[in-house]
Amino acid sequence: MPGPPLDRLIDDLYYLEGVPPYPRLMLPAAPAPLLIVNLGAPFLLRAGADPEAVEYADGCAVATPTRAWEFGYPTPTRSVGVHFRPWGLAPFLPMPAAELCDRPATVEQIWGRPAITELRQRLTSAHAPEEMLMLLEDELVRRMRRINGLDLVRHLSSAIAESGGAVPISDLGVAARASSTYVAKRFKEVIGVTPKRLARSYRFTATVLTIDVAAPIDWGDVAARAGYFDQAHFVHEFREFTGLTPTRYVEARQRFLREHPDHVLEGWPVPVD
Image (cartoon, rainbow, N blue to C red; front, side, top):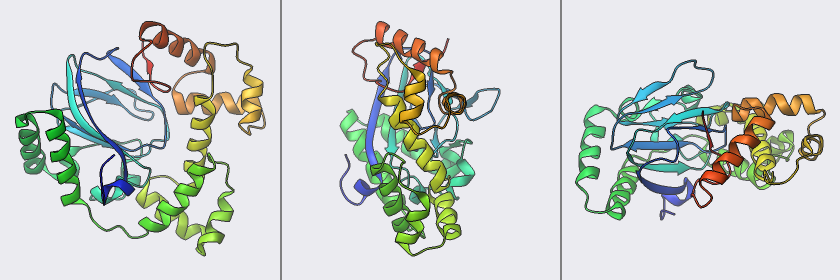
């Protein structure tokens, strides 16, 4: 966890190096923007409904997605990155977050080629991962800018997160003494999605992370406990958020846990055949 002022924007910074467990992983539409500064061979991303993967050499920025996305790792892989809170990426972008929704940008597109070239050179010259993360943290502090409506969005998003997406969205605007139109506009600019969409993401994430793939699953019961009116709606949303049917997701998670029982990637990512 970084210190102030980044601690209100970021969950963690990380360093990744080595051989990935699978060449491709499917990642969910979770409320977790991401910044990757790539230090190795280019990686591939297939976002949203894109039929083909796109190559990223210097890294990428991913705003809160609305659909599952696929990450193709080079072997070996090496990068540093940031896991943001839903509102945390916006202060480091030159454009509204909505412009990156299901359309990841390269780091060059957001910070410029000279800046990312210099940053990558400093990172690769560092002597240890801890030094690399300090360099990245310093770069973020230097680039952080004020965003209109950030405090409002952070406050309301925190309420959505604490309720697991169950808080009535209409209540948020009333509590904030702001119109639903104003709140939705600020959310789109800061997070990339509306409050309703963010709540759906939290609700779905909370539901799926409670599924024990090692035990029999009553999908009707899972859907009902998550607040879905019917199982068909739940299955449709499951495919949208994970890229897989519930049955296929369980099979992929079982395979991951069977082949890599002690791996740090727990819960969400699933291998792509």
